Length: 292
Ligand SMILES: Nc1ncnc2c1ncn2[C@@H]1O[C@H](COP(=O)(O)OP(=O)(O)OP(=O)(O)O)[C@@H](O)[C@H]1O
Ligand SMILES: [Mg+2]
Picture (spheres, rainbow, N blue to C red):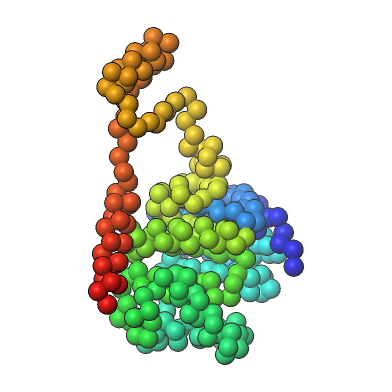
């Protein structure tokens, strides 16, 4: 089947939750016009209560809009046929505590009508994909750490090899290395031609993986566009080099000032804490593996 160019399209999509009294009505999402192209990673941002989860629930057909409409992969939101090609990672992981990771995925595989051989292959493939420690795969989920649970939920969202994956806060509860792994995983999904809609508070996640994004505020789009356009500072020029002598630095600064540039400053770049943390944990894990 040819994927339609628009993975998601909404027109004036609006959700007003009814309150008990009229005055308690909650305008959670107002006239959202969203277009997500097939194959892109799209970020849904906004502070708490700005309408991200509401948008996702509308796209999945879990709730009905008050006004407007939403199409997912060319069909109305909630369509059965579309659901089979969709993966969803909810904000909270709802997993059965008494099953282990393998049993959980096996159960979902049955729901997708996969046969035993297909399930066995897919279960370990996706648990590897999300990086769940093999040592815990046979242990019941009730004993998992937050990050381990999140990984199982992610594997579950990917199990049916969906074309579109909707993730509500995929990195919540993960340690920095886990976050980095999830980001790389999202990029791998993109390389495989998948579309990802991602709601998150982690701005760094968005910066590293998203092609385009919207920022919601009180249910309205406050800003939208391609990440590169939104973040590019066209009025600033930056030069990077190693082994620049203090004399040359001074001359460069003087030259720039003489030429009429303003706000000239030398910036010493710092490594990212994320990189530092990753290096440390990687080294530890390597020693652990060597010691086994
Ligand atoms: N079932 C409901 N009934 C009434 N109001 C609701 C309901 N669900 C959500 N809301 C309200 O709608 C608004 C948007 O909520 P939503 O969950 O979409 O926000 P969000 O952007 O996902 O926030 P967060 O970052 O905290 O997850 C909030 O004011 C919330 O209180
Ligand atoms: Mg939410």
